[in-house]
Length: 442
Ligand code: ATP
Ligand code: MG
Figure 1 (cartoon, helix red, strand yellow):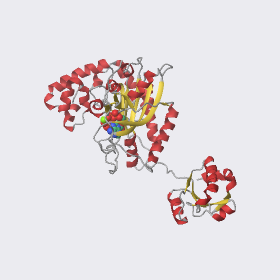
Figure 2 (cartoon, protein in one colour):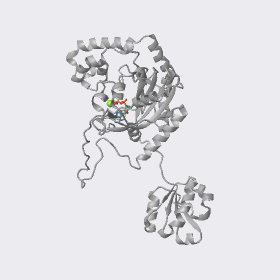
Figure 3 (tube, helix red, strand yellow):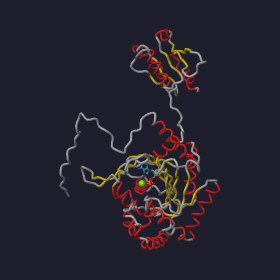
Figure 4 (cartoon, protein in one colour):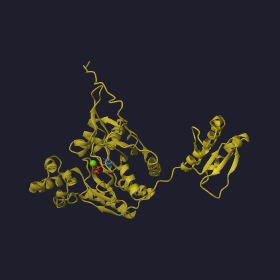
């Protein structure tokens, strides 16, 4: 079977003289700011290893249908935030992932990865949402996403939450003060159905006070009215029937089991009966970590249980629980609190007065690096004054001076840059591997 395809529209490079700018709401991360990211990523890797979570990576682009099915049609993300487009060459409907969970589940189902039993996985990377950019809200941002699949809970639910507390501590945040936990239970579908009926009746009785968005949602997704950010709607929302009063025994037992672990671990939290999360797929445990330091971008991390989502995406029924954490927001929080990531400075900076000596210098640097020493080479020559200025600015503890006199003796001079009391010494360049470790000392 053959389909007729029109040739794709030619692409253009625009006005060649005009400098190109990045896409609005999408950020570049340059050094030294990138050091904060590297530090965060290193902390996360350590944390995941300690809790037995393994790394899983999926493509940035997925079939659009995955998110429509996974997130629900009547969600902010699907309704108005997705970067969706047709593949120029074959017309396939594609979307830049707006979150990680759907893609992870698609991959797990596609590769039958739950075959051997429960699976704990994490991923980290960019996601895309077409929102109005502001501080803490971007169009490309990064999420750490963690999913525990195949466990009914409530043990893993509680463990995930405690893992986040451990993450805050690793980063120097104080829970309860800098970042606080809110939890709720969304029960099961039939319980939400009963609650939903009560909600619709309540909102219908107060229809005159609903804003436009809420009127539209009244019959399609009344629960989302509770998630409104419109301040004028708050009094109405505050007084609405709460789901917790509709939960049955099993749901309540799950919720108290989660709380019992958190209580025993000494983790304070607020039960927020209004916490519904933005997505349709959650049931039972839902939680958010919020901070008072980021204005209206207060939620750093949110997650919960989604026991029907895997089946909804075409997999064999299996429960799941997970969370997504906004890395930009978390780093903004660390910055707001003055929490610095450890300095990244090389151990040594190589000063090379005469570029013609490079063939003798470079093998020495290679030997030092093989021994674990971080050495920055002053490339391109320049006066000693300039080279020492750069050495200083690099933050290195030592300057390695490959002067003509030193090289004539088969040596390099080692000048301490941070310790005024320490004296300059020399070492043989032929045996760099034997003294490399001396440069590693703080
Ligand atoms: P919000 O209510 O702030 O829009 P959300 O409910 O849409 O958040 P989730 O889908 O739960 O957010 O995503 C998890 C986390 O990702 C959020 O808690 C937040 O830290 C971060 N996040 C969400 N949207 C953005 C964005 N546009 N820019 C930066 N971070 C974001
Ligand atoms: Mg949002």
